[in-house]
Every structure is written in C-alpha cells, then in structure tokens.
Image (cartoon, rainbow, N blue to C red; front, side, top):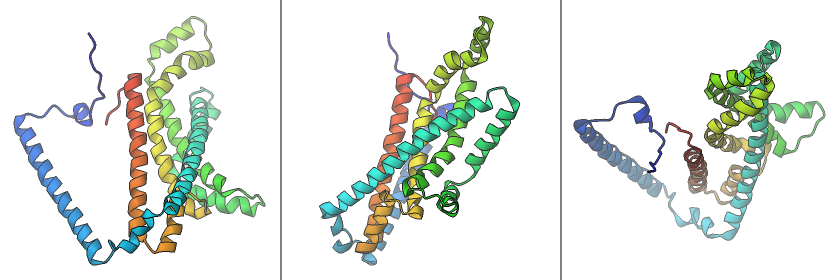
Length: 276
C-alpha cells in the first residue's frame, strides 16, 4: 500500500493545525485581503488610464515580431550568463565547502573568510570591480565575463554554505562507520558523505538559480545584452517605459516560478523534504 509524500508547509513546521474557529477567521481574512488587492489593482489600472499609459501606442510594439525577437535574444543572453555563473558557483562553492571541512585549520580559516566575504559583498559591487580594475591593469574582459564572474562569486558563498548544511545533515554514525573499517577521511567524504549531501541539497541548489537570474538584471553596468538591457533599448526607442517593464516583470516572474517548481519537483522525486 503506497502513501503519497508531500513536503511539509511552513504552517505544519511552525504551528499546530488551526481549529474550526481559526479556519473561519482565516477565510474571512483571506477574503478581505483579496478584496483590498483587487481594489489596489483597480486603482493602479485607473491611474494608468488617466495618465494615458494604456494608450495603444505604448502597447502596439508587442504586436511586432521584431520586438519579441529582440527580447528573445536578450533572454538567451540572460540564460547563458545564469547557466555559466551557476556552473562556476557550483564548482567553487563545493571547493570552498571541502576546504572549510577539511580539518586543515589554515585552509579552513581561509575558506571561511572567502565564503563570508562573497556572501556579504553585493554582486553589484563585484561587477563594478571587474568592470574597472582589470581595465586599469591592462586586461580587457568581454562584457559576458564582467557579468558572469561576479555573479558566480557572489553565489558561490551561498552555495558553499548550502553544501556544508548538506554535509552536516549526513548522520555522524555513517562517518564513524566508514572510519572504523579503515577508510580515510577523504574516502569517507567522497564515497559516503558527498553523495548523500548532494542529494539533500539539490532542491536548494536549483532554487539558488532564482538569485542568479535576478543578479543578471544589472547587466546594463557592463552593457551586456541581456533581457533587461534589451528592454531598456526598446524603452528608449518606443518611449514605452511602463508597458515594457510590466511585460519584462511578467517574464522574470514566469522564469523564477518555473525554477521554483523545478526545485519542488526534484525534492518530491528524491524524497527530500522542504519547507515552503
């Protein structure tokens, strides 16, 4: 007899199940909040109408194939940066985690400082660093790498901590059992700990792509033709700021929603419980 496994909700993890009276209050509160949201949306649409932002000239550009082709080219640029930065961050984050958990105190201290540095420094500041410093040293980086490298470095600090959390989730008894049969610490990590740790954190690794994708929106700093940069070009050409930003926001929301759903799907397939 098979039972369906579902990931626990945040409510299940933190609170007891609500009783009948509380459920009625929740329904009433939800209805009131929904009505307020609808009123706010109506007020925004009315303001757009009053100021002329709903005029056809601001939206007719989306009926042109060239507009979507140009946005599609920018989307491909965003995907290329996100995938490259994600791959680099994955490798670097794993290396930082291995160094921090190696047991070699100098190496662990260095990896801890590097991890905390990349976690604490805004990716935009790193982008400015790669934009100005290499040029002053006589190095010419393509705009792709001016954006990809800082985004990857900023994400690597977070991924290092994600990997470390996965390693800490592996039962200590399994490590001790591996050591007791004569395996070295390196072999225990490679054969016992890492396979399980990676399985635990795969949903979190996928979800981290959301942050990577959002970090690419500052590509205008290095003039890299990503989705946002191409949208800014169209805004300048058609003077359609509100309509263009609304469409781009919907595209980013759909991308990030797809990534989140992918992480939930992988979590359910692998049996890893996540709180959402």
